[in-house]
Structure formats: C-alpha cells, structure tokens
Length: 419
Ligand SMILES: *Cc1c(COP(=O)(O)O)cnc(C)c1O
Image (cartoon, rainbow, N blue to C red):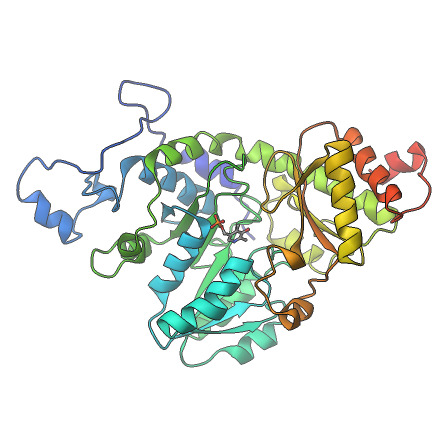
C-alpha cells in the first residue's frame, strides 16, 4: 500500500535555519507579534492570513517554532498540515471536538488508551452530549452495525494499547466514509511504521510523549490532517485548540524537533529488540503477543500495511497468568537486574514495564477489559535499546526462571537459532 518511507517525506520538508544562520531553528519566545501595516491585523483575526503565509498573531494561536515542528509531523504522517498541542490527550480531545457537535455519535475501538476511553465513555457524554459506541474494530461487521445516522467519526488506535491488535485502516476508512464520517487514528504506537493518512485516515493524532520524543521528559501531542482541519482547530470563534488553550511551549517544540532526526534509528532498534525477545519468548513457551510473530492474529495485515524499514514496532506483551506473577516478574527485573523500569508510558530508551489492567487500562470496566482481552497478568513491555541484546535477553530469561514461569535454561545453540 503506502510504499513511500516517511523519512523521505521528512527529508523533503523544508529545514528552518536559526535567526543568525544557526543549523537549528531559533526558538520564537514572543507571545505577541507585530504587524507592518494596520490593515494586516483584521486579516489575521478574520483568518485570511496566518502561519502558512508567515504571519503570526498570538502565542496561543500559531507560534513559528511550534509551526516548524508541526510541519515535521505533517511530513512524517504525509498530511497536508499538522499542529502540536500540550499533550496527546489535548490533541485527541481537540480532534474529536472539532469533528463532533452536541448530539453526534462516535464509533470507537474498545481497546484504546485509558485516558481516551475515559474521555469517550465518561467525559464527552456528560459535558458535550457526544456518545460513543465501543466495538471490536477488528470485527468490521460490528463496526458497520454500530454506525448510525449521527455517527461523525470512527476512532481507533493503529496498534491498540495494550492488546496490540492492528486496525484495518483502509477498511475502517471505507466504512466511515460511506457513512459520511471521518476516520481518526491514534498512531502513537507506530510512528513511521504506519502512515494512516496514506491508508485512508482523515485525521492522525499522536502522543509525542512516547516514541516521537523518546526520552520520557516531555508531554506533548499532535493533530495531523488537512490544512482546513488544522485551521479549524485554531479558529478564533470555534477552534478547540485556540479556545481550550492546550498550547505547546515553543521551547518544548524546539527540543522535540531535535529528536525527530533520530526517530527512525530509534524505532529500528526498538523493533529489532522486540522481535528478538518475542521470538525467543515464544520458543520458550511463554505467552507473548507481538505483531511480528507469524502466529499473531494481525501479522499478515500489519505486514501489508507497514513500512518495512521499521519492523513490527517496539511493544510486546507477556501474560504471566495472574497480577501477582506479573508484579513478581517486574519486581525482579527492576530491582535485581536494572533491566528496565516499572513505569507506565512507552518509547523510552530503557525498557518500561507495566501491568495494563491495573494501570493504563484501569479506567475500563472489568467487563470491557475482559471483552478486549486485557487479562490481569498482562505485562506491557516497551522494549528499550540500552545494553546489548544478549545482556538484556539473559536478564529477562533469568527473571522468568526466578519466578518459575519457565524451566531450565536453554543452551546457547537454541538461542542463536531462535534469534
Ligand atoms: C500516552 C497515550 C496517549 C495520551 O498521551 P499524553 O501525551 O499522555 O496526553 C494517547 N494515546 C496513546 C495510544 C497513548 O499511549
């Protein structure tokens, strides 16, 4: 399907030099901007000119530094435009509020990030009279059946958290478009790996807090779509980014933009490590879910949709059978080996581990968790790239032995074949 490597698009995006010829762009610290002629001010307020023409109004509206980072995001996602927000949740809520009015209906995946689930399940019905039907989006007939005359958008994660089921983006786009709805895809788990817009999505949202920033030191988000859509987010009368005001600080934008050039290198290494772990865990009989394993329900689909250069992503899950066992494993790994950290979030250079059912998916009801396949012993692992692969694998294998999840060590001959 989408064969262009997003990195090619990114390379073609115009690079902004610093004010004094610096190789990096300058940080525009001003919150207000002068106009050369009095007539320009009304034009800015009427939205007839804006960042696209190099004209700026106010820091909560477009900021030049944030706009430059946004152009990088638009290039990565292959959309006409993008704009950044203070968090992934800000990006998601702005995108939804831009597309839906009071009384509208959403069809959403039943396996979405906990905050998104709470927004759709609790916040939006109470505050905005926007109601969501949750469905298993891998069941296209169920998606079709959930569509109503009021359905304005279909919402899914490219690779779902934490089940790692893959959204059939072209098929979902077809269902959405036939019903006069738009498809919004959260691509947080698979930047570069998947290009949802090229596959039919209308809007792509990101928590840049994760892989895109990659250092677990910044909360940030982005909305990618048409220029008209992005301008709508910033409309002075109706734009959710403009009026709710989750503004990205320009110093944050400058920092993130310096991490975008090595995003591809990082993602390749996350994926290489995750693939090795998944194959070896599978060979040991551990219950592991990773979309790069041929036994994964969506292996074929992801293989068809993905950009090959980035493997199958950097996240895997292990099912240890019970929350106690899951906690035991994470405790051993964190305290005895320095393998990684018990922490939510993902896309960090070290491995991050969390028990999804009692953390990032805890907003879901027990019933919804079980229908989505999120069991109590499920450990989500965002595989880091520090240390050597063999060092980290040995640590994981030893920890699994310590807690009795696997038997005797296997010999190194088997290891090299499994890898
Ligand atoms: C973390 C995350 C979010 C929320 O992003 P924040 O930057 O924490 O607001 C949304 N979607 C997914 C898939 C996430 O992993």
